[in-house]
Length: 142
Ligand code: HEM
Image (tube, rainbow, N blue to C red; front, side):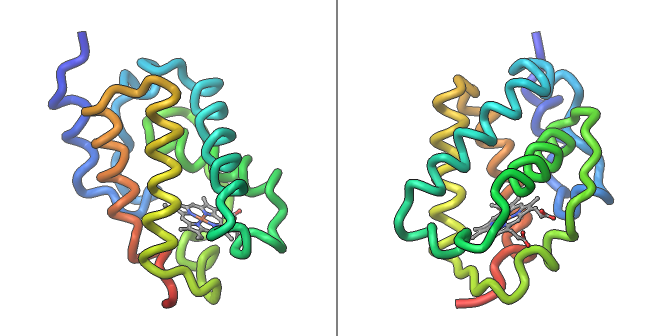
């Protein structure tokens, strides 16, 4: 059995995923590792693309490349072996006018994708703490 503290502890200081300790391996493996992360990220972007309030942000974006980078980014953040080779988060989101409402909407789709995949509530909360800590790198306008 995985102890709750093990899941939450490494998360709190996360902001720059490269510079901080990832979540424990057990967290990543608990939900099925790489295929599970890929499925969650895919569902997450399906939800984003179906949201008319968000589609304008992604009009000129190569979604296949974005999904690949995001899968590695989230996999790595959850303690997996993935290597993230995308842009620095601040650079990727600069000049895109992302405001707090857009950020919250995206986070809402992530929660829905996590819940649909059966991620338990305390784990979902831990992932959201991690994502919430990245807000300042993503919210670039508004
Ligand atoms: C919730 C936290 C978020 C995280 C962890 C995140 C993470 C990422 C990552 C890893 C990339 C890939 C960068 C690359 O391909 O090199 C990316 C790109 C992108 N993100 Fe986010 N993102 C977040 C929120 C948002 C929000 C709220 C929006 C807009 C409403 C957004 C819009 C975009 C766009 C348009 C790109 C493509 C940039 C490009 O291709 O140049 N992201 N994001």
